[in-house]
Image 1 (cartoon, one colour):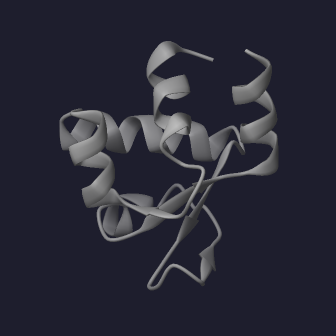
Image 2: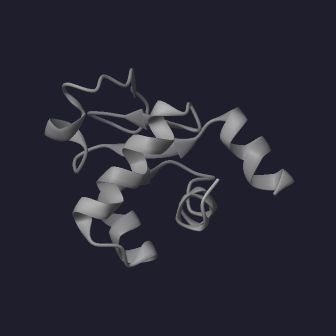
Length: 85
């Protein structure tokens, strides 16, 4: 796990919207999207859209269209990796 991924997981103990992640991490939006995509592909986080209670399965083809409107949460596996580092 890279330092940026670790730092991003730090912010995902609760469902957090993309805009809040932008403010908390200070990452540029395209870089944040890339980090989120990587974590989703690894199964370390989950995405929620259109509301924070509706989990959305990750699909590579549609992620870019909803990435900035979605919210994110660390998965159980993500929390385990984050806490054992």
